[in-house]
Length: 293
Ligand SMILES: Nc1nc2c(ncn2[C@@H]2O[C@H](COP(=O)(O)OP(=O)(O)OP(=O)(O)O)[C@@H](O)[C@H]2O)c(=O)[nH]1
Ligand SMILES: [Mg+2]
Figure 1 (cartoon, protein in one colour):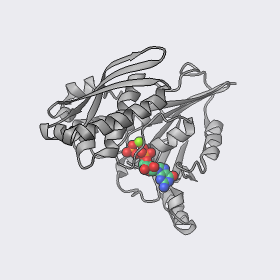
Figure 2 (cartoon, rainbow, N blue to C red):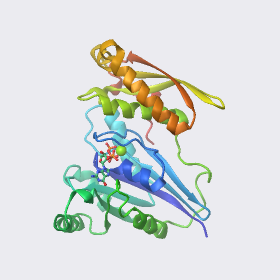
Figure 3 (cartoon, rainbow, N blue to C red):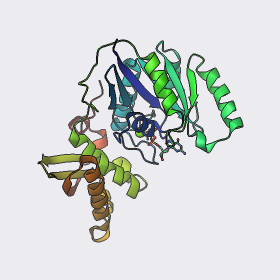
Protein backbone atom coordinates (compact mmCIF):
# COMPACT_ATOMS: atom_id res chain seq x y z
CA UNK A 1 0.00 0.00 0.00
CA UNK A 2 1.30 3.44 -0.98
CA UNK A 3 0.25 6.65 0.70
CA UNK A 4 0.49 10.17 -0.70
CA UNK A 5 -1.15 13.52 -0.19
CA UNK A 6 -1.04 17.27 0.13
CA UNK A 7 -0.29 18.60 3.60
CA UNK A 8 -0.83 22.34 3.45
CA UNK A 9 0.57 24.76 5.99
CA UNK A 10 -1.42 27.95 6.62
CA UNK A 11 -1.73 30.59 9.33
CA UNK A 12 -1.13 34.22 10.21
CA UNK A 13 2.15 35.96 9.26
CA UNK A 14 5.34 35.25 11.17
CA UNK A 15 4.06 32.29 13.23
CA UNK A 16 6.77 29.94 11.89
CA UNK A 17 5.19 28.20 8.89
CA UNK A 18 8.33 28.26 6.74
CA UNK A 19 10.58 27.25 9.64
CA UNK A 20 8.24 24.30 10.23
CA UNK A 21 8.20 23.18 6.61
CA UNK A 22 12.00 23.31 6.43
CA UNK A 23 12.24 21.16 9.57
CA UNK A 24 9.70 18.63 8.29
CA UNK A 25 11.37 18.33 4.89
CA UNK A 26 14.88 18.50 6.33
CA UNK A 27 16.02 21.07 3.75
CA UNK A 28 16.04 24.85 3.62
CA UNK A 29 13.40 25.18 0.92
CA UNK A 30 11.49 28.22 2.09
CA UNK A 31 13.12 31.39 3.39
CA UNK A 32 12.28 32.23 7.00
CA UNK A 33 13.08 35.55 8.65
CA UNK A 34 12.04 37.58 11.69
CA UNK A 35 9.95 39.86 9.47
CA UNK A 36 6.26 39.23 8.72
CA UNK A 37 5.28 38.61 5.09
CA UNK A 38 8.48 36.82 4.26
CA UNK A 39 6.78 34.15 2.15
CA UNK A 40 5.00 35.41 -0.98
CA UNK A 41 4.34 32.22 -2.91
CA UNK A 42 3.04 28.73 -2.37
CA UNK A 43 6.13 26.56 -2.17
CA UNK A 44 6.10 22.79 -2.12
CA UNK A 45 8.53 20.68 -0.11
CA UNK A 46 8.27 16.95 -0.79
CA UNK A 47 9.18 14.10 1.57
CA UNK A 48 9.67 10.77 -0.19
CA UNK A 49 9.99 7.27 1.26
CA UNK A 50 9.51 3.98 -0.62
CA UNK A 51 5.88 3.70 0.46
CA UNK A 52 4.94 7.34 1.06
CA UNK A 53 5.02 10.82 -0.49
CA UNK A 54 4.11 13.83 1.62
CA UNK A 55 3.72 17.01 -0.42
CA UNK A 56 3.96 19.91 2.02
CA UNK A 57 2.97 23.40 0.88
CA UNK A 58 4.24 26.47 2.66
CA UNK A 59 2.07 29.53 2.04
CA UNK A 60 2.14 33.28 2.73
CA UNK A 61 0.74 34.45 6.08
CA UNK A 62 -2.93 35.35 5.80
CA UNK A 63 -3.45 39.12 5.48
CA UNK A 64 -5.87 41.80 4.42
CA UNK A 65 -4.57 42.91 1.02
CA UNK A 66 -3.55 46.54 0.50
CA UNK A 67 -2.16 46.10 -3.00
CA UNK A 68 -2.29 43.58 -5.84
CA UNK A 69 0.72 41.54 -4.77
CA UNK A 70 -0.92 40.96 -1.40
CA UNK A 71 -4.09 39.85 -3.20
CA UNK A 72 -1.94 37.24 -4.97
CA UNK A 73 -0.39 36.23 -1.64
CA UNK A 74 -3.82 35.73 -0.09
CA UNK A 75 -4.92 33.74 -3.13
CA UNK A 76 -1.96 31.37 -2.57
CA UNK A 77 -3.04 30.87 1.05
CA UNK A 78 -6.62 30.25 -0.03
CA UNK A 79 -5.57 27.79 -2.73
CA UNK A 80 -4.05 25.72 0.06
CA UNK A 81 -7.49 25.31 1.64
CA UNK A 82 -8.89 23.94 -1.62
CA UNK A 83 -6.62 20.98 -2.31
CA UNK A 84 -5.37 19.86 1.12
CA UNK A 85 -5.66 16.26 2.27
CA UNK A 86 -4.46 17.38 5.69
CA UNK A 87 -4.33 20.99 6.87
CA UNK A 88 -1.74 22.26 9.31
CA UNK A 89 -3.02 25.49 10.82
CA UNK A 90 -0.07 27.14 12.53
CA UNK A 91 -0.41 29.66 15.33
CA UNK A 92 2.12 30.77 17.91
CA UNK A 93 2.03 31.85 21.54
CA UNK A 94 1.80 35.57 20.56
CA UNK A 95 -0.74 35.20 17.75
CA UNK A 96 -4.16 36.80 17.81
CA UNK A 97 -6.86 34.33 16.65
CA UNK A 98 -9.17 37.24 15.76
CA UNK A 99 -6.69 38.69 13.28
CA UNK A 100 -8.11 36.87 10.24
CA UNK A 101 -11.28 35.45 11.61
CA UNK A 102 -12.89 34.90 8.20
CA UNK A 103 -10.05 32.63 7.14
CA UNK A 104 -10.19 30.81 10.47
CA UNK A 105 -13.93 30.30 10.08
CA UNK A 106 -13.31 28.68 6.71
CA UNK A 107 -10.82 26.34 8.37
CA UNK A 108 -13.46 25.54 10.98
CA UNK A 109 -15.89 24.22 8.37
CA UNK A 110 -13.37 21.95 6.65
CA UNK A 111 -14.05 18.23 6.66
CA UNK A 112 -10.48 17.02 6.14
CA UNK A 113 -8.21 16.44 9.17
CA UNK A 114 -6.98 19.74 10.61
CA UNK A 115 -4.03 19.81 12.98
CA UNK A 116 -3.65 23.00 14.97
CA UNK A 117 -0.02 23.62 15.79
CA UNK A 118 0.77 25.99 18.63
CA UNK A 119 4.32 27.00 17.75
CA UNK A 120 7.10 28.73 19.75
CA UNK A 121 6.24 26.99 23.00
CA UNK A 122 9.86 27.65 23.99
CA UNK A 123 8.61 31.20 24.61
CA UNK A 124 5.82 30.38 27.06
CA UNK A 125 5.10 28.43 30.25
CA UNK A 126 2.86 25.46 31.08
CA UNK A 127 0.05 27.55 32.43
CA UNK A 128 -0.16 29.95 29.49
CA UNK A 129 0.05 27.03 27.13
CA UNK A 130 -2.80 25.29 28.94
CA UNK A 131 -4.94 28.41 28.48
CA UNK A 132 -4.05 28.63 24.80
CA UNK A 133 -4.94 24.98 24.19
CA UNK A 134 -8.30 25.60 25.85
CA UNK A 135 -8.91 28.76 23.80
CA UNK A 136 -8.02 27.07 20.52
CA UNK A 137 -10.13 24.06 21.36
CA UNK A 138 -13.13 26.41 21.56
CA UNK A 139 -12.21 28.06 18.25
CA UNK A 140 -11.53 24.86 16.29
CA UNK A 141 -13.34 22.06 18.12
CA UNK A 142 -12.61 19.45 15.45
CA UNK A 143 -8.87 20.07 15.19
CA UNK A 144 -6.23 18.00 16.87
CA UNK A 145 -3.98 20.33 18.87
CA UNK A 146 -0.24 19.86 19.05
CA UNK A 147 2.12 22.26 20.84
CA UNK A 148 5.48 22.47 19.07
CA UNK A 149 8.67 24.43 18.74
CA UNK A 150 9.58 24.35 15.05
CA UNK A 151 12.87 26.09 15.68
CA UNK A 152 13.96 23.54 18.29
CA UNK A 153 12.40 20.58 16.46
CA UNK A 154 10.25 19.90 19.49
CA UNK A 155 7.12 17.91 18.63
CA UNK A 156 7.95 17.66 14.95
CA UNK A 157 8.66 13.90 15.02
CA UNK A 158 5.30 13.30 16.63
CA UNK A 159 3.69 15.51 13.99
CA UNK A 160 5.33 13.51 11.19
CA UNK A 161 4.03 10.28 12.74
CA UNK A 162 0.51 11.66 12.89
CA UNK A 163 0.69 12.91 9.29
CA UNK A 164 1.82 9.46 8.13
CA UNK A 165 -1.19 7.91 9.89
CA UNK A 166 -3.67 10.38 8.40
CA UNK A 167 -2.25 10.39 4.85
CA UNK A 168 -4.63 8.84 2.29
CA UNK A 169 -3.85 5.83 0.16
CA UNK A 170 -2.71 7.11 -3.23
CA UNK A 171 0.02 6.75 -5.84
CA UNK A 172 2.75 9.42 -5.78
CA UNK A 173 1.90 12.80 -7.31
CA UNK A 174 5.48 13.75 -8.18
CA UNK A 175 8.63 11.95 -9.23
CA UNK A 176 10.14 10.30 -6.14
CA UNK A 177 13.43 12.15 -6.71
CA UNK A 178 11.72 15.53 -6.64
CA UNK A 179 12.13 17.75 -3.59
CA UNK A 180 10.08 20.79 -4.62
CA UNK A 181 7.84 22.17 -7.37
CA UNK A 182 10.04 25.22 -7.94
CA UNK A 183 12.97 25.59 -10.39
CA UNK A 184 16.52 26.56 -9.37
CA UNK A 185 15.99 30.19 -10.45
CA UNK A 186 13.20 30.57 -7.90
CA UNK A 187 15.57 29.68 -5.07
CA UNK A 188 18.14 32.14 -6.35
CA UNK A 189 15.67 35.01 -6.21
CA UNK A 190 14.38 33.90 -2.80
CA UNK A 191 17.90 33.71 -1.33
CA UNK A 192 18.64 37.23 -2.56
CA UNK A 193 15.31 38.46 -1.21
CA UNK A 194 16.11 36.87 2.16
CA UNK A 195 19.22 39.07 2.41
CA UNK A 196 17.13 42.13 1.57
CA UNK A 197 14.68 41.23 4.33
CA UNK A 198 17.61 40.92 6.72
CA UNK A 199 19.62 44.02 5.85
CA UNK A 200 17.01 46.69 5.06
CA UNK A 201 14.14 47.99 7.10
CA UNK A 202 10.89 49.96 6.81
CA UNK A 203 9.14 49.50 3.48
CA UNK A 204 12.22 48.43 1.50
CA UNK A 205 11.85 44.61 1.72
CA UNK A 206 8.18 44.92 0.76
CA UNK A 207 8.92 47.10 -2.26
CA UNK A 208 11.43 44.68 -3.74
CA UNK A 209 11.16 41.87 -6.24
CA UNK A 210 14.12 39.85 -7.46
CA UNK A 211 14.29 38.48 -10.98
CA UNK A 212 16.93 36.09 -12.27
CA UNK A 213 17.82 37.09 -15.82
CA UNK A 214 20.59 34.59 -16.41
CA UNK A 215 21.28 31.24 -14.78
CA UNK A 216 24.03 29.25 -16.44
CA UNK A 217 25.30 26.15 -14.70
CA UNK A 218 28.26 23.98 -15.61
CA UNK A 219 30.16 21.24 -13.73
CA UNK A 220 31.97 23.54 -11.32
CA UNK A 221 30.21 26.89 -11.45
CA UNK A 222 26.94 28.74 -11.71
CA UNK A 223 26.83 32.16 -13.40
CA UNK A 224 23.92 34.26 -12.23
CA UNK A 225 22.67 37.70 -13.26
CA UNK A 226 19.88 39.00 -11.08
CA UNK A 227 17.90 42.23 -10.98
CA UNK A 228 16.49 43.78 -7.84
CA UNK A 229 13.38 45.73 -8.82
CA UNK A 230 12.23 48.56 -6.59
CA UNK A 231 9.22 50.86 -6.91
CA UNK A 232 10.92 54.24 -6.73
CA UNK A 233 14.24 55.99 -7.50
CA UNK A 234 14.79 56.80 -3.80
CA UNK A 235 14.58 53.08 -2.97
CA UNK A 236 17.17 52.31 -5.61
CA UNK A 237 19.57 54.62 -3.79
CA UNK A 238 18.87 52.92 -0.48
CA UNK A 239 19.42 49.45 -1.91
CA UNK A 240 22.76 50.46 -3.42
CA UNK A 241 23.85 52.44 -0.36
CA UNK A 242 26.75 54.82 0.17
CA UNK A 243 29.53 53.95 -2.29
CA UNK A 244 27.63 50.76 -3.13
CA UNK A 245 28.36 49.24 0.25
CA UNK A 246 24.84 48.03 1.04
CA UNK A 247 24.45 46.22 -2.27
CA UNK A 248 27.91 44.73 -1.92
CA UNK A 249 26.92 43.25 1.43
CA UNK A 250 23.73 41.71 -0.05
CA UNK A 251 25.70 40.35 -2.96
CA UNK A 252 28.43 38.80 -0.79
CA UNK A 253 25.98 37.22 1.66
CA UNK A 254 23.73 35.96 -1.15
CA UNK A 255 26.72 34.41 -2.92
CA UNK A 256 27.74 32.55 0.24
CA UNK A 257 24.23 31.17 0.75
CA UNK A 258 23.94 30.25 -2.93
CA UNK A 259 27.25 28.37 -2.78
CA UNK A 260 25.88 26.36 0.13
CA UNK A 261 22.58 25.76 -1.65
CA UNK A 262 24.05 24.62 -4.98
CA UNK A 263 27.31 23.16 -3.64
CA UNK A 264 29.22 24.99 -6.39
CA UNK A 265 31.17 28.15 -6.94
CA UNK A 266 28.82 31.05 -7.75
CA UNK A 267 29.47 34.08 -9.91
CA UNK A 268 26.79 36.57 -9.04
CA UNK A 269 26.06 39.93 -10.61
CA UNK A 270 23.21 42.00 -9.21
CA UNK A 271 21.67 45.07 -10.88
CA UNK A 272 19.07 47.42 -9.42
CA UNK A 273 16.22 48.77 -11.54
CA UNK A 274 13.12 50.86 -10.91
CA UNK A 275 9.82 49.35 -12.00
CA UNK A 276 7.24 51.94 -10.96
CA UNK A 277 4.40 50.54 -8.86
CA UNK A 278 5.09 46.92 -9.89
CA UNK A 279 3.19 45.68 -6.81
CA UNK A 280 -0.04 46.95 -8.33
CA UNK A 281 0.55 45.91 -11.94
CA UNK A 282 -1.05 42.60 -12.91
CA UNK A 283 1.23 42.38 -15.93
CA UNK A 284 4.37 42.75 -13.83
CA UNK A 285 3.08 40.34 -11.19
CA UNK A 286 2.38 37.75 -13.90
CA UNK A 287 5.90 38.14 -15.24
CA UNK A 288 7.30 37.73 -11.72
CA UNK A 289 5.44 34.43 -11.36
CA UNK A 290 2.55 35.35 -9.09
CA UNK A 291 0.03 32.93 -10.58
CA UNK A 292 -2.21 31.43 -7.93
CA UNK A 293 -4.65 28.84 -9.30
N1 LIG B 1 11.17 31.22 19.57
C1 LIG B 1 10.81 30.60 18.47
N2 LIG B 1 10.87 31.26 17.29
C2 LIG B 1 10.50 30.59 16.17
C3 LIG B 1 10.06 29.25 16.20
N3 LIG B 1 9.75 28.88 14.93
C4 LIG B 1 10.00 29.96 14.15
N4 LIG B 1 10.45 30.99 14.89
C5 LIG B 1 10.86 32.34 14.41
O1 LIG B 1 9.72 33.05 13.97
C6 LIG B 1 10.08 33.96 12.93
C7 LIG B 1 9.19 33.75 11.73
O2 LIG B 1 9.45 32.49 11.16
P1 LIG B 1 8.97 32.10 9.69
O3 LIG B 1 9.16 30.63 9.55
O4 LIG B 1 9.56 32.99 8.68
O5 LIG B 1 7.40 32.43 9.83
P2 LIG B 1 6.27 32.36 8.69
O6 LIG B 1 5.00 31.94 9.37
O7 LIG B 1 6.71 31.52 7.56
O8 LIG B 1 6.18 33.89 8.27
P3 LIG B 1 5.56 34.54 6.91
O9 LIG B 1 6.14 33.84 5.74
O10 LIG B 1 6.00 35.97 6.98
O11 LIG B 1 4.07 34.40 7.03
C8 LIG B 1 11.56 33.68 12.63
O12 LIG B 1 12.32 34.64 13.30
C9 LIG B 1 11.77 32.29 13.21
O13 LIG B 1 13.09 32.04 13.61
C10 LIG B 1 10.04 28.58 17.46
O14 LIG B 1 9.71 27.41 17.57
N5 LIG B 1 10.42 29.31 18.54
MG1 LIG C 1 6.94 31.99 5.60
